[in-house]
Image (cartoon, rainbow, N blue to C red; front, side, top):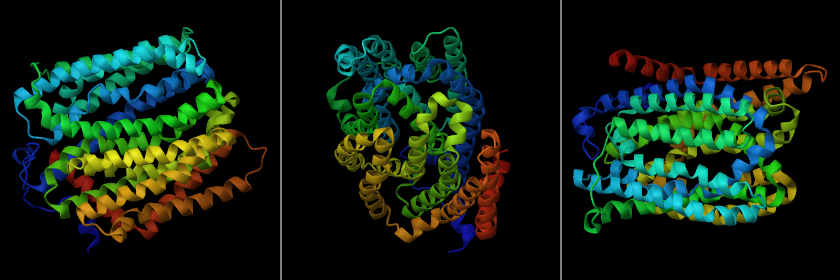
Length: 509
């Protein structure tokens, strides 16, 4: 297949579905492609511009609150699955199903009720969890932090209605405003010496503000729920909910294991390693996954187009996240010492390990989105359950080697359960393994060359060099080598993709 055509997101074909109103909005796949690129670009630009400020503030907050305070807040992650029961996954039903206005109004009422119910469950569990972790202050922390569940449930339908209308520009602007506000508020609280309450109250304020803005932008009526009307969307969202519930449980088990076996200080170190390692995933992959579902729903009857979207989106994500994640592993020591100080030195080794895992996870994130778009939430649910059953014992065994051992559990076990996810996707969209691997080959080749070069430079730099000098030399080497490999080995693909993005925005203007 011609490289430019393979990369292009702009071939002209008529859409043949209006499940999300896409046919009314987009007359051709070229228009839809440009809309997706525009949504991703806006999402990325808005998020990264706000993150320059918010991450700077976050690093200052971490310096002020310390690992132990960060670890106390990290213990609340055991209740994160309730963030999904706060909506019961009804947002997915709104996006994926063709629902009447009355059904949506009934789901809006249920969203508020689910949010209140999740808060009540969290409040009831607060004291037992605090006793389990032998951390008395944790009870009140959980109760206050869980107030955000109410905001999540109340705004669920309004938020997904904006997504269904492809109003992603509005959503990313809202997220940017809320992030900047949250960063400033947390920095103020940390400066005033509020300790762990800095993170708790900052997060709660952000949840409430975002919900208030979204509801004001897309107000939804309420209606008394009737089982006969909401059964179909609730069954669909129930499968999605259980899958997300299982996913959150296994993603919380490492924190749970560290907290129980190693204590709050160790959890603080592990938590910051996880957070930093996943910056490329959250700030690149999420820019795509948060907007892509309505587009997958709109083209799911055309498998050729689905394969093209998956292939090209995977390639774009891999080109950005693979070098970033591996690069984090290579400069972990310099980065931690420079940004956080020596009291966070224990986070260096888990950061190296988790960065490698995060690179692989970045491209996997598209697969559940695609399957749910095809209505296959049931498979995603069972795959999440299998992942939970595999990872749980591995975290426990890994904890015997400290937080680095827990991090290694992700690297060793996660790829095996993901194989089933890949098989289901490839069977569903009739995609070959070689076709998929071809989409990540440029990133793999460039990242391997970069790792060898940066490793060599790190070995050659004298030990008496300053931390900042070592960091600059390693980063500069990595950027030059990675960019050079892409230009030498995959120049045609890069030029085609850049030209596509440039042309799409010229037409948008």
